[in-house]
Image (cartoon, helix red, strand yellow):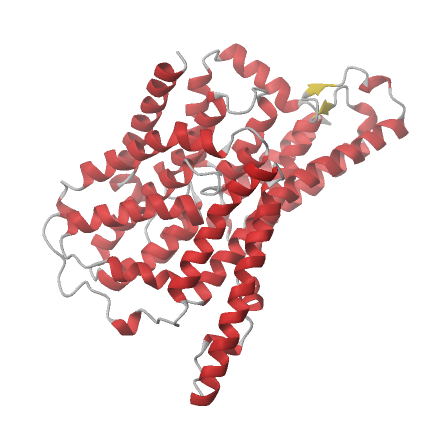
Length: 457
């Protein structure tokens, strides 16, 4: 039975990695393999020798002695436990996604367009890199990439030059997301699972992540694509900024309320999704108020393009990327099936025996996240390791999973969205950008290990 579950998981995983070749959304194999894995467990519950208690993080030695009803009851309790933990992550993400969509509804991100005033390619590269690094730490690396490439398309006409800029934005956005508990799905998973705290994550990873971004950008700034000036006027015209009167207010309110979430968790010790729901409530309240005011003003002028003709909350909720949410659900619950049978626990023991150096294991995880999705890899690591909160291992996992995906364009959500927006080919990225991302990853990892040695010994 264990072998059958592994085969189902492997086939589902393969279908996820071949999403673009198979032309099926990755949510389909994710939710399918989750359901099949748990169905196999239910049918063969009496044949399994081990059961892993996720709450105590240890194998139940008496599982084999339980009656059928007792095993089924334990399976249902375990399923509910993992459903609850997964729901914490999903509702957190839903809240963050909705806030970002509300900001976009009021065209709040247009504020960033007014910052671009230089024609020098090298200076422009550094501006975009630091914007990606900082913005991705607040609104996540995927959204930051979308926002910045949208701006890029307004000011850079040459296709090849734009692809180079997009490649470096991917590296910077992934690096920026790694040091923030709300900057990447994987760091959010570790934070919600109480493996890392917001303060220590920033303390240990902001410098390695900065190095991971600066090294590739510094090298690229001396390369031919970033020499000289852009052709034409790079300043965005007022017509392209679409100010809705409240765009700047909603931008700073939305970003501020997202940043409020870690503080709320620290003060109340409640799960992060509770703080995110409070932040969402505040942002939605102001969005409805501003929308009503705009409606009253524009109803006199009969402006059909006004944002006030629809509820911003309802409109924003309709824009949420639900396939991604279902994908995360399927992956996390499928990995939970492997964890519940003790497979990940035994795999971790075998891995530690074969490769006793955990740094190598974690760096391999980073390389693996470039080939396959980093979400299941981090989900698996949660079941493989039992170190206490803020152990350096968890910080290194957050860094490796977050930045390692930059080495291939399909290795991260920001890479995939850039691939679609700019039609960047897999092999162009492999030839032009991969070596820069690898240098950044290795440099950041070395910086982390040096800091760990100096701070901990």
